[in-house]
Image 1 (cartoon, rainbow, N blue to C red):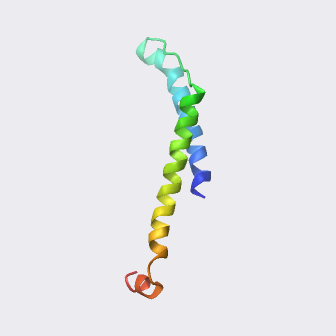
Image 2: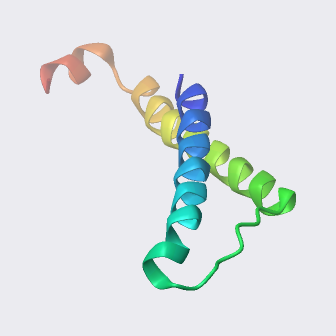
Image 3: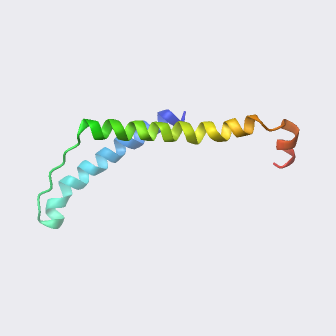
Length: 75
């Protein structure tokens, strides 16, 4: 589920960057070129995906080692 949620977030971030690029000349008076290199974009998605997987798997692996009765005692 977490892997599915980071894709829309990345796309929204790209969309916001594009909109800010369109608004920058009116605000700053300087044209700014909007360019996204595919290698940077791919690397960003790989790092975000790995972070998402680790953030989900590490706590789950730690919780799997606990005794159910002891874990529920502290809830």
